[in-house]
Image (cartoon, rainbow, N blue to C red):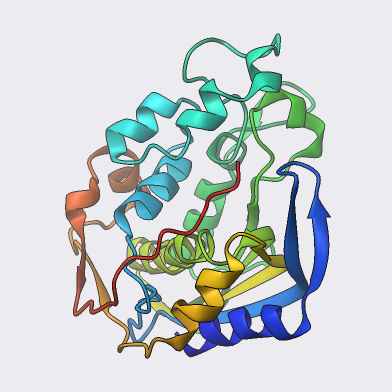
Length: 283
């Protein structure tokens, strides 16, 4: 919580006002933010200075792990995060590449599990990583990336948190995740949960100890209509201790994550928080 609140205060103290063309709003913005999560000691980074949630974030990332390209599949897991991008994005609705209702195209997990090669075959980035780590191999390129500029027009949205690099030191696994843009009051806790859970899951299925997760954000911002609530409410609250994330120990393979795992296999314990804050969301 301290590093989250420090970032919020840094944006307020040092940020530059930037006009965002997509939303038509101004953002108070800083460049380069580095966050660190102690996954090994299970200090789960859920925000405690307002009520926060975790299941939708983990459900979305589980959908990426499965390579889903349809918003209905994400809803079945327990998250509606792709409904609007799949069905309300005018550019995507008018695209010849859209296959129909709920289609997302070649975004996120599709790239991670079936990156298209020049010869028409596909590359499963995640399986290569899991196989290597299980065998104690770190070739310094255990990289999962969703960012494929050559196929942006084939999907409804460019990836925001776009690349994840695993590093194996002895029997301890670390993760560095890269994010190009972040709405700090609303979006950051969602992304924090995903980074933490991704390292915890991959460490568990590869038989490694979880170490640290490093979360690098390029453009961190607070929208102008969020600033008052951040300054006058959230930053004046005292944080509580971090909760813990419990993952079903029966999850032992990538195949488990691909098939039977649900949100019932995750639990947060020891979570104390302040009242919710209804921050405006910018579409």
